[in-house]
Image (cartoon, rainbow, N blue to C red; front, side, top):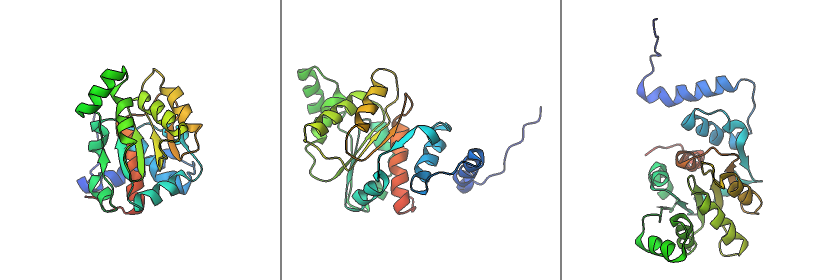
Length: 213
């Protein structure tokens, strides 16, 4: 059996990937405001289900872009998610990327309170003074804690990206966030991951300026 490979130059691989995604979506017409985010999620995962499962609250993308331009920072629930976000692109607008999961005080708080580090890290993030985008790709407990902090009026996120992956309380945690009045982008169902959280952040950054660092 002869296997044929496409002759694609390294710099053209991403462009060709997006061409294939567009072709396979066929006649499907995506909302222009959401198209790049949806396609980047498909590109990251090779899962076309994101064309249907991604939920966007009213005006979420526009509000997120405004927040980034105003210097919003991003808080993630994993070091993997943090590493995948284009920090130089975000820094052009004054924002930083934080992940408090490995911090000693977070570990001590979680142990003392009998909670997860993900929950404790959200409490630490609540003290940040700048606008914050929360990008949750792993821990539903982080998403639940965000919901509680929002309901208590302790935080007012510029955006919540709710895409934890897994089984225990994953779907329920996403449903809670969709019930709030904060801007959110949520992957309904069990699918998601830190890579999806990071790619949504990058998609937003590249919608402002596609310059890569």
